[in-house]
Image 1: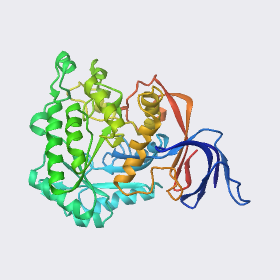
Image 2: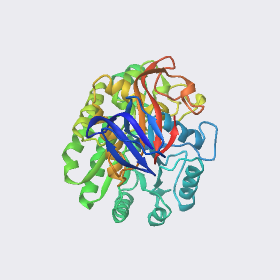
Image 3: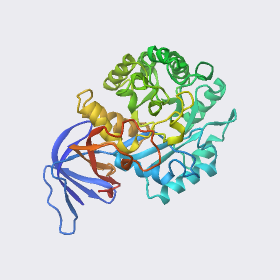
Length: 415
């Protein structure tokens, strides 16, 4: 297959050219390729061709339930958002804490036709360490733990993942400081009379985990960083070890102002924080203190959002409009460059997990997205593949950019 007349962009370069795909890989990139007689040719007509996004923060609801979003709907939504690889992280709704659960998730992924599914398992269950070695043997790519777990369990999990030469995924949480909180602790929470989630509950846990990881010479991916103080700590401790950090997309362009009208759609964890935190996160992407942008996708039903703010579920469904949101709010506005975004959504996640993806280079997997930056679309329920209303836009809002085609391993899955 040859993709002709491409405007090729990855985190390293931008140029006009053609791409030859052989089997599952990029075989050749040149200014102009002459197709062979038997080759299929697709004229991209000057649209952008970029590496598919690798989403390290994707959540599913109970895999056996279809009340909010079935597994197939969740996976189907990623193509429209320009995501070609997902790391499914466990949640309270869907534990992945043993060999059989891990195998079942992989089986569901294969049956849905999506080959690029990585699975993270729970490091612990009910305060006990799971058999991490067996879980890795069953095919998981990582294990995940909340920092609020017993510190000795956290240490042992770091030691196990170090032996497996994989990062431990750690979500910084402090139950004592966060148990009643529903919104960022600041001026907006005080105005609305809502209990707050303080930034220092996150930053204190970030410091603890980073110090432990560095002392043990273990690799760690800190999930869902959202506060300015956390970034200051990372800037100091990250160069001393193998620390990676991930930020949810919405925290880069929305602040707690979006909750001022008691808008439960925008209730998420970590919470949308103050404008100063948001700006610090943007600068951290530019400086690469934060490595990864993720969707933090977690669909929620109408019923769970159409309640008082204190009772509403945390979670946003963004995967179906992931790349258009990035383009609309960060690239088109020149807040971040294509290089900044593609490093954080493609190259860095691939590097963390040792994948030959994330760049448009000869020999790399042909996971590619054709993107039209000039096309606009109104956000409506039709764009989402589920019963969720937990998306980040009002349904009348227009977003810029559209995913036109998606190739995974050289196979066209959307177009």
